[in-house]
Length: 145
Image (cartoon, rainbow, N blue to C red):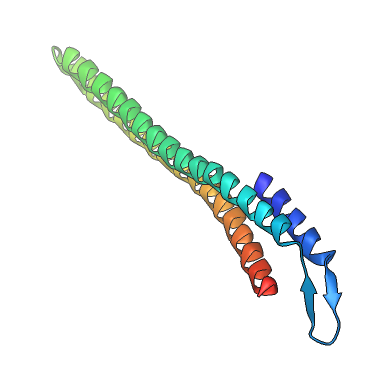
């Protein structure tokens, strides 16, 4: 992430600043710090856009999985109605249809769970990165005060 690199640069600038004895403060180049903060502001929207994309992608995958499950169920129901003509065939058709519906529902659940886990892991990672970034910025702001 570019923001982390920029924050490391900010950290380096603060660490390399001249210490003022007795007061426990340091002198920093105001222009350099402001330039680094400007870079952070420019890069932050990219991370926010990425989080939005992850959210939209998760929703798209969930909708796609639901459509696929509905298509499988519709196909199974269609197959059931075509086998209704004869008794023995009807009995087997109901068994197969129930099995197909059960499998379709199981597959749909698995797809939804996998999609949610994937989206959650992406969002969790992004949340960790943003939390780290916020902590570094807050720490640096506290040090600047």
